Image (cartoon, rainbow, N blue to C red; front, side, top):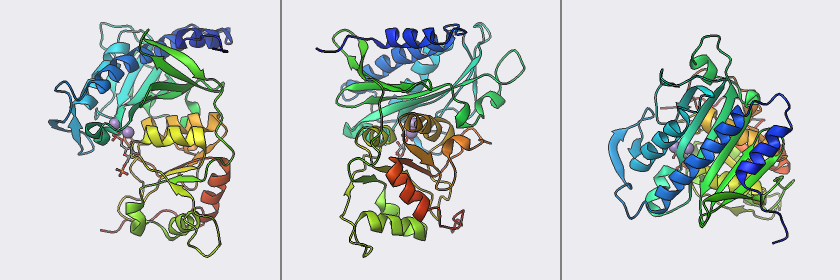
Length: 342
Ligand code: AHG
Ligand code: MN
Ligand code: MN
């Protein structure tokens, strides 16, 4: 092994030392998230063996059937962090409203929003799923947190990251000083630094990633972009490869490593797309930007969008700069926004 063994705990502490004013609060939050990731990963790995697969019979705020693993992951993250004393409020994809810190625990100066289990429709088929998190500073004046703390634009994030429960469990995070990936060594239960200073390729492999089943609902500009990527628009462009897992964390992680373009666009039925701004698009945009890529809604930098609702969605295009230039050229030329039809 030609690289020193750096655990995520050591990496977080080393990063903290670079900020003389640091109190260790953010480090504690990141460390507790790594603990939650191990607990969730353990259940994901044995989901087929225990009665944790399948439906809870509940429906979440988005009208989606909630799977037992969604609820488990949501609960693990909340309980791993509710007593850490450094959060003033949390918000989860699985909860309609913000989650205040129980009165018996101290409040802190950070805000955590998260997607506890991303790609959950894939879990029954043993396809990679993930967890996505976003951390902001508290901005409200009161002693405890409020919705104002959760509704902040992505450029104000102090940290963002995701966990991918794939062939191995990986945690990727940034605090604004590079993007770093850690692989869980299950034999010792430690996340070990395996991908320091991750950079997305300027163009990378010729891969595009989108659910083409929605092609007929897309804007003309997007249809032309995908026809260009397929080499069928008469431009003699060599066809690209299409890769789409249907778990955002898996599709974004591959795009970060291999380059190319990931899209979850709006369409005439859902002009603002499906992915949520606060705990899917914004944290992934911080990661991709931190690795030298770009992320937009087709017109604006995702990180510049001011949220108005906890679970609002946004069209999302992210990836290598060369492909984001094509998004600007083709999608940016479309009249905004798409008009929702029946
Ligand atoms: P979640 O399981 O947290 O609701 O996220 C699912 C999302 C995202 O992971 C993925 O990119 C997208 O759903 C796939 O949607 P389609 O099945 O409509 O393509
Ligand atoms: Mn998700
Ligand atoms: Mn989810």
